[in-house]
Length: 181
Image (cartoon, rainbow, N blue to C red; front, side, top):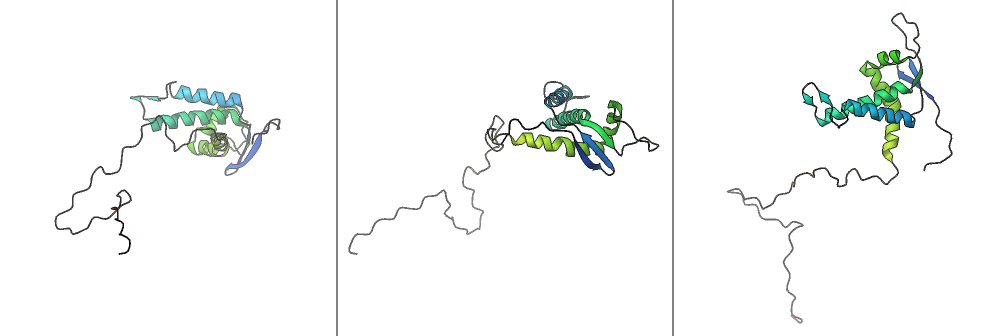
């Protein structure tokens, strides 16, 4: 149930995002969500296809590129403060756009932030309100090919197997016995 009038979500600390690293994340807002969608669209060249050196990439690759751009934008906008992040000498670093980009350039750090900040929100949004289409229902996508046999298989020579009644064959109708017999 959505409760109108509840207090807006506030920033929250995620402890141990990585060993020894705590991050204060801003709540994901509508402007941040839209900026992330624009970043994903830009990464996908606005047409749902990521453009690489050899033309367009496969759909799975395009989905990964768009998803990474989406998450990266949300995380960039979401990191407000951190503890346990420092320079090469061990001195704490302030949160700046440049520092956040350097921090997220490591795939393990990016994945940790994505898992703790973006994924819970995305899963919550995915649940919807019950009026969304069924994920296993029919859609405009191509349906799988027919996987059942169209005719009876030929019996191999020398095999004495008998035909067995299946659910698709009707039993023969039995004649009623005359009364008194």
